[in-house]
Length: 195
Image 1 (cartoon, rainbow, N blue to C red):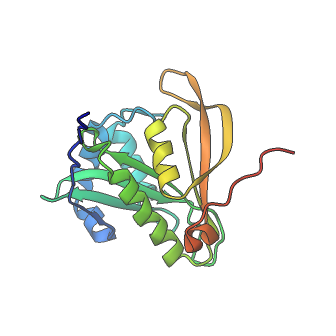
Image 2: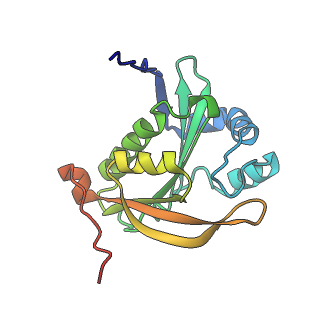
């Protein structure tokens, strides 16, 4: 019996995290976000006007929000990660969350796994007061749920009909988190759901 192996595609990319870079590439960021289709987000097509308002309000970068650009080998944006709910200073124990958007043709190539691993390391390395890092996604976003599992996150919650889409449909969503102790020890502490 002959086995067929899929050739693994290696995507070279880097994550840029400076405020100066984001300001300089604001137009590219807006173009990327407004031209993409984000099927598992409440607003799958983002209007430029909404992005302008969010930018002015500190949605992308402030004390409690940070945005990182994922660039391919030629410097084009192929993804965006927004880290939020960092709190007001490194002593704030608020639990941070994140949002990630990967350009359609780069999805399914391992970028989400690498980016979330990098982001988890960043959170727990730079914010020593953070005991956990969490995220939610729609229950039918199987790819993202697999990324969570791969990166050491554990499913902690299931929210029924909690995620609206642009047409007014409601979806269940799931909550995942990783504990600092699990990150440090490279373990997964299971959640005990039963009484």
